[in-house]
Image (cartoon, rainbow, N blue to C red; front, side, top):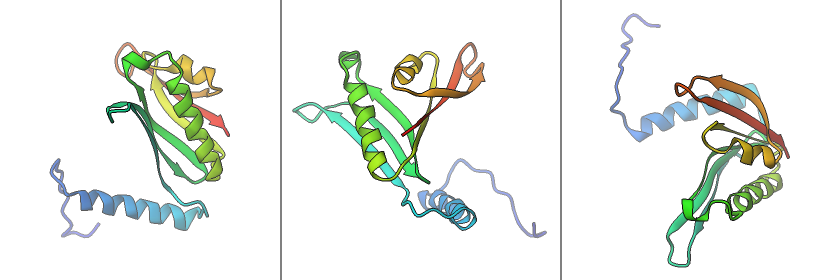
Length: 142
């Protein structure tokens, strides 16, 4: 590091600064381990006839994998198969985009059994996060 370089720790930043950092790591990753697959978001939103959001699944395709960040269904629709339909549609779309793997994480108080029912396997566990709970990391080959 240059002697005149300053370290600035801040919670205040511009979105463009965050995007710059993301672009830099993506450029490094691509130059080190190139891939032909385009990266990009993959999101499905579940709405009622009035346009109210009742659920959704948010993810990103990258390097022949789908990462699911969030899958949420409103309490009134849980247990009626909407989560399964969203997950199956995400898998279908990501397969068509060339993905061969899907991965995600969930806590033990969320949907571990749901994902296992859909063929996911646990490949890692983080104990005591948050205190008294476990966070599970799951994967599934497509």
